[in-house]
Image 1 (cartoon, rainbow, N blue to C red):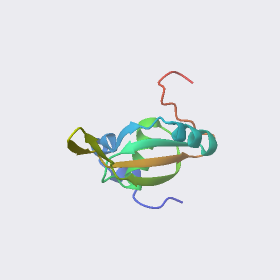
Image 2 (cartoon, rainbow, N blue to C red):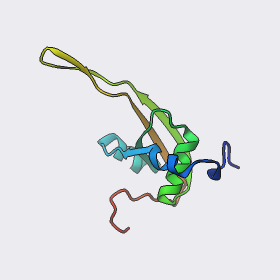
Image 3 (cartoon, rainbow, N blue to C red):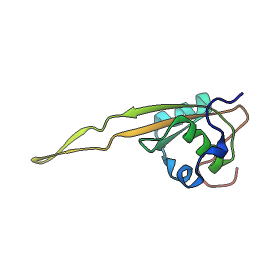
Image 4 (cartoon, rainbow, N blue to C red):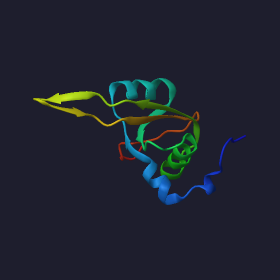
Length: 108
């Protein structure tokens, strides 16, 4: 049983823009191995339903669930001037058992 909007209700052009980049870090790798989840940087206004639909459309995998985290950008100094890093919205996409998402591009 699926909650939320159907995959067909989304604009395909919008879905192609929702996922900004995969996040490859030590933490993301640990989560991927432990709970079969992939981490993406997504648009600030992306919803969980859009993220799920985008992953299913682009990678042809079945998604079990999506968790979203908003990270505030840090304030950084460059000499006298003060700058600020961008706020980031991360999506942890959990795949259904038996599903695998290959971000490397090489054949599995």
